[in-house]
Image 1 (cartoon, one colour):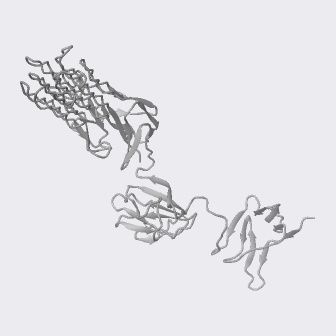
Image 2: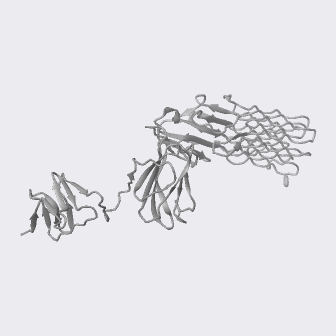
Image 3: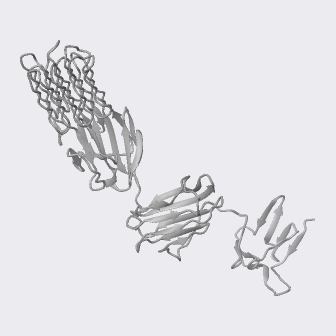
Length: 483
């Protein structure tokens, strides 16, 4: 027969304090600092309801519908935590303090920055902090580990400086120390942010940047709950043209097109930027194929660069450099125009930029050559430089456009320099434009445009048709608010 003890309450003889008390459906085990031990299989109240029951190796406290409560002042051990903290809502922190394991704190830095000193690390310890009223961007909160302990594997403090930011840390071990397992920002109540994949992903503050140096897909997995945050910033650069052979003109840069989602995002952009809603790209939850234009090839009949494409934005490949040898031709039209070749009695014509026409313009014109010297290819923001002659200097390539869409200033879309048979080669424009060549080709070959800048190839200086420069390939960069 199973052993049973049926009682409503068990009290101590010495002071009549509760050991076990049942009131309605609430069972209280022990008083402050007390422990309870029983050798029976089941401990029941007088009405037959279980207080403690054992079946095999499973011990159950209370019955269905009961509430198990620790007496005021009592503590528990051995049950572990569930990855959460007890939020200290009755004690908003406004000055430096030391955190305790298992607690979360609302920190108000409205009166000035302060520090949260983390407790000495023990495996499984957990601490959370949260911006109380969106002031961390004005006055930051610093998390300081105990002694030489680490945070996320590194030594030193961790600073929270984003509006509405919150962080949960769990102590793992001496190698990693405190590990951040959850981070959030609740700057805008009820808002959510865009989530996307594709390309090489980096971050700059609250913005995520996807850079494509080859073909791919920009996939929007989820859109923002704020409509304005679904319009993305972008830079789309096409491939630069191939430089002209034999006293050839420098090639035009690939078309440069830039958009900025102002006023949501105000990164330092180029003079060619189009701000929302003009030419803005508003995205939805779908995949957007990315095309990266290749640079034009060197040849006696050089080729234009290829187009780069993102959504509704197409940047046109740069025009090739003009040449007067073989198939004599003028510089090509394109995103930026190619420079003219240097004919023995004059020059071939130059190509036109911003072809086809878009606003803001995606590039500039090339410049005609001179006797035995090639003109400079157009760059994103500057017309190709003039060649001097006869037998003088090749024209410099036009400068490209500088943007900080990635967080640092980078120039794209420089024109290629013109070649010279007897004088000085033209220099490539800022933004990946290639230098032209001089005679002899064996030691003074024209250069290639820089990859993933859309730089135009350099024009060649002497009679060889194998030494003019290839254009640089293009790039697509997409930027949006992600937190």
